[in-house]
Length: 233
Length: 233
DNA sequence: ACGAGCTTGTGACTTGAATCACAAAGTCCG
DNA sequence: CGGACTTTGTGATTCAAGTCACAAGCTCGT
Image 1 (tube, rainbow over the protein chains, first blue to last red):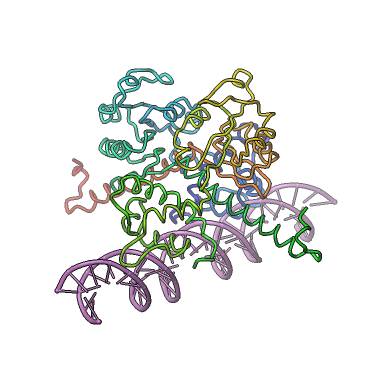
Image 2: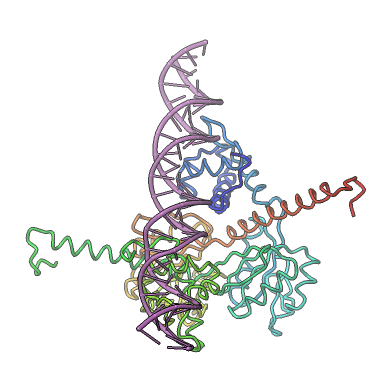
């Protein structure tokens, strides 16, 4: 099992396990955790946890569970988070600012190393302790600071341009918050996070469940022995 | 095909097609669009587009493509976005504020109808034209305003409590930005968006690709006819 | 009105993920 | 030291998603 490539779906869950393990490690009461407990905390089922962890290696002990600290380290290592990765944020509107001042990154293996914008009224100002630089200086500063991750927090239109500049600066990993699909060279990975899309997906299920509830209600009425129209309560 | 339930994966892509269609509809040059074009814009392949759309019905014309306006309407309807859905944001830290003042929601079928917090220095203030109310008033205001979607933008600790309050207020759809897994009754749908998790997934692939590049580099050196150690350039 | 040329819609197939279920390997207690 | 009890690790199986490939259906030019 050990040498097989780790499935995408598993990679996407590792950070969730990591989060759960961090909270366990914090209150030092529990040295060890079972797949069942971990599954509860992560909101998945136990078999999935075991299979996922088995891709990393045999880090558990039968009859006991997994050593919290050890597993924590192994997942951290597998995700490449043993030292803080420097990231840059491009676009300092509301969202960019919120991201720049988000304290959670530091705890989770990242460091905001640079901020960029094109608006002259923003360039040169200080956001969360870092001076905003002009997008034109991207390549130099990225090289200088060793930035490896780019976070696009611009409006949709400039997103493509920014992605190209990032690729040109040698960045291989991009997180895109702009509501636009960006095209990049094949050696660059982009993940998209779109708030509206998430809401629209919710809307679909909302509507569907409502339709089901309505249908059930209707058939309940029709199904009752006394199913005359006036039965409506 | 028509009556089969729409696959989850397809539902998740419909909003992306919607986005593409909106931009086509804006510049009125193109009345019709082929699966190939749409695929390009959405960043997927054409066969997938056709299969996805076929779940909604036969809305295309062979030899021609899909009518932009008509398809736009059908997807909007399928997603339940024909009228604006009222949403509430709970937690007005940096992220909550950014969301509250995000203009994109209105264009995409949503309306921020209410804001909540527990901090007395925030309750009563005005954010993006809406007065922040205390979390304790949640149920009343949700009923009053007909809110159907809850957006959790609190720190991780209060997230579970907020989710329970939302469920108690009758909300069936929750978008959770807090870095915590929340448990809800089975009739409530939760989608989680976690910025750190997205970055951690990127980190994994970043590291893996780097490892591959390094390995290739090494084998290139070893593979050369003259593979003596000093060949290193 | 017919054939050349597109483009859709979909059955058949392939790939990948989730689930099941159980042997293997450990602990604990009398 | 042995047997009852846990819990892992993983083949085997089922289920969902993605891809292929082509007949069906439409347009347009002649």
